[in-house]
Length: 333
Ligand code: ATP
Ligand code: MG
Image 1 (cartoon, rainbow, N blue to C red):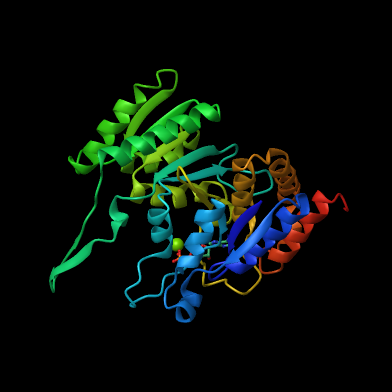
Image 2: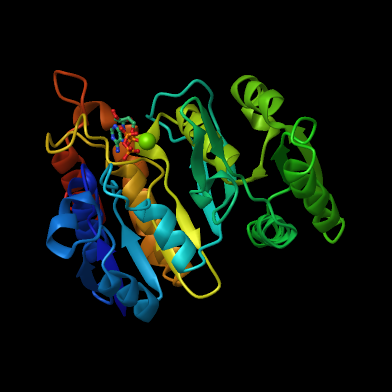
């Protein structure tokens, strides 16, 4: 089957290329359709998100994507936000899991952030009303809130998760977050067999850091979901271990939580684990559970011995990491 592949900017080529090679090592059923997006191609296409790239995703329904930057000051909207909006990828699914061999504050972390992906503070409506005053609009709708909370509960059902916790700040944003909370409470009633609670976002952050095992599935409006994802990636070893998927009713785009990491781009030290795990989420999504499982077992073995993968400077060697995984898959070492 055909799948759209976008390397993107910064560390994108390094981590996605590694993922592509690893997936090719477990299956020959995938034909990659390589398309472009991001800041680096903007001059060539006059846009960071060419229409043919969107068309390819619409046609193939599935894409694996590296991080993309958006050129600053040229009036373009964020590539990520555009893709999510144009394809109505309303659910951003981000499972965070700790692995043996990866240094973390806590053992056995296993939680999932479900982030609303189409509205909130990400609608890009900001203005200066005078030289000293800026306004940012945040839109919360009943429909999008119900849809994302329902997605979270369905995910919990399908994946045998016990509990859903909704994040909000309805004590301060009475209308917007109030609406999200009300929608959450209402949807939760449809799933009496699942535990449900809601927490104020600031208190939730403290609890996540102190008692992360209290959480299972967390559902949040766009902006809180963004921050919670990075916070929780810190619980499992950092952004290099946090995979993700943007899911809609028609299409799904799989991409790691991290961005372009310009500070380490091109140095061969980016951790491809989050991209590889995103690739595994993709394989599972298209029903290739066995292949995903093969990669995950290899990944676990490599994590367990991952000290060898780090050079003198303590940085991971992207290529060596990839090669070790492929060796494990092919049972060479
Ligand atoms: P963007 O604006 O595209 O999000 P950013 O500067 O915020 O770029 P991120 O990719 O979000 O960068 O990551 C923040 C920092 O975390 C990076 O600067 C990098 O040091 C580290 N980091 C992110 N991803 C990885 C990775 N895959 N492997 C190793 N370090 C990473
Ligand atoms: Mg970032």
